[in-house]
Amino acid sequence: MFTGIVEKLGSIQNLRVEKENLHITVSCDFTSELQVDQSVSHNGVCLTVVALEEDNYTVTAIKETLEKTNVGTWKLGDVVNLERAMKLGARLDGHIVQGHVDQTASCTRIENENGSWVFSFAYDAAPKNVTIEKGSITINGTSLTVVNSKKNEFSVAIIPYTYEHTNFHRFQIGTVVNLEFDVIGKYVARLMSL
Image (cartoon, rainbow, N blue to C red; front, side, top):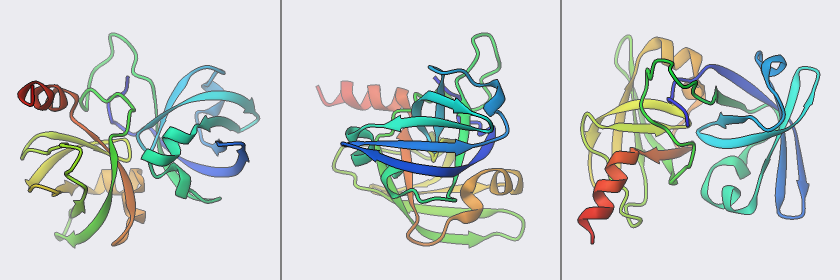
């Protein structure tokens, strides 16, 4: 369980394919505090630490993860948003994030608002995932508030701190991102469809 408040940016140091799995080695500032078997959110994808070596740690993505997220597109040197699992009893500064990506989306527009940015994204509405204005959405592991919601697209506003301390500053038109829709909204949508 995560909060969607990105702690650090990590850099992809190595990618190794083994059968249908991808082993990903990441370098980040909190590697020395990690232990094997801990969960870390990588662009919103919950992955388990399987190895530690100096300033790097390794996680493994399976076929299902590679098919449903943007993990399979990562390249050496790419920067990913990182968050360690939430501590029980700590503040929930973002919203409840499971680290289970629902689908990907594509960045369609970036508007500079003279001190902030509005990013727009298009996604496939077929899986019945929805956004609502002022509702929560997780983009690449970052907890955000929807400011404009349509059937298969939405926008979010980004403050300078978030822009600088997440990988949003690297987004371009066409960048593919991971989406996790609000867990409460998903349960409500499921109940409404019964």
